[in-house]
Length: 298
Image 1 (cartoon, rainbow, N blue to C red):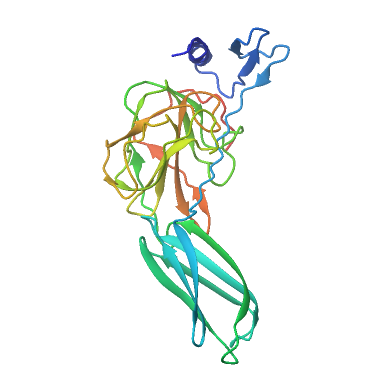
Image 2 (image 1 turned 120 degrees about the vertical axis):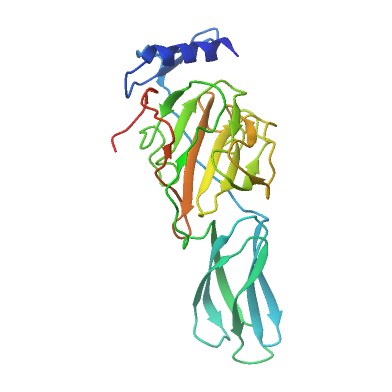
């Protein structure tokens, strides 16, 4: 482990039970990085940013097929999870049934579903339209079950560096109830709950181009999803469509994406209606002994 990482962990340990401590990062003229709980000239507050941007590019497609009577619109879902879709058709011309149309459906995993057919008012002439197609992983009609999550790693004990409602980055809908656990790179990460692997990223190096870095997203049977972020490049050993159980090895912890230090970002999310939001969860053992250095007020 690099010396500066050791120094960082030593600082975290030294902070012990202190809550809401601000950590400062500074770089001297020789490029040596230092961390302190006291502000110094030129130092900047250490900010944990865990913005999640996932796309289903190439896996979720809108298909518009010309038929004799008009246009048939279908949604093709190539993922291993149900996907909620919304198709909005506006400025319809030469169409029966008005000038706009809104359709929302849940498309099962690995399937194609017809959304609507727009029939031409005058046969032999094309139907005109403008489309807007949105989608989100998961089925919002499912109701999640209470579940206490075993710790999703082997080893430790490790330190909680940012918890629910953390003021640095855990305040948006997708990550409000996430937890960041500082741990050395290469720590074994395991599935905390049974489910199907539905999304992975394994090629990010350093900060990379993906804010979440390398990650694994698992769909649970009740429709919730556990997401493990900032994993080590090339360490993900599960594939999309694979069924896992508690304890299945997933990857190794890392420091990829928008990460300011080696840690695991773990969050549980569900579809709340064309949007993923984090939901509260608990580990099956107390984290009271792990100081939360950046906790915000609930």
